[in-house]
Image 1: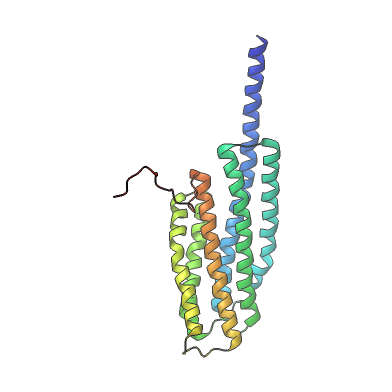
Image 2 (image 1 turned 90 degrees about the horizontal axis):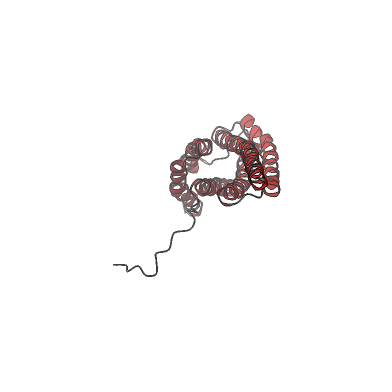
Length: 242
């Protein structure tokens, strides 16, 4: 009889802990989704500031970066508390750890968009983009605009299909980045040294935003499936390859 009562108490305690964990993870997930929304907005605003010499948009990106820093700290604190109090294992542990990585990734993306905005602000009222590079930079900004929408969709729905599209679409940004380098190294380049430096930095910042988006997508895949897309499964050693 006593053993039965103890078992019932343990089961009730387990259910209570489960409820608490789920509620706390919901709070963490809301903060991560908010980070994704802020990053997406920063990507769009930074692109607008760059293409249109929009000082207001540039300043908004720079000012709002502190919100991302604060949210990152909150998410990490929440996750550390969960690890200490709940001692999660298996799927739960995977979600907590991956969420911490997502927070750090989004914070870094916020820094990069701020760097883009700072270059746009520094060149105002002139446009920071030399005429020779305008078409390529416009394509990079368009790519970031699409990517911003994919990020929010991916996080809000935990959609691995969107995550996969982000991962496999990054080659487009890489090629645009390479084109910028080819442009400034070519014989036809006639920009100033300052334009060259700003252009190379802008291209690098946007290319890195794409890379960090891929990192975020991989973490979402890891949370949902447990599969790390950075690692390809190795074939069985006994398998005969034709």
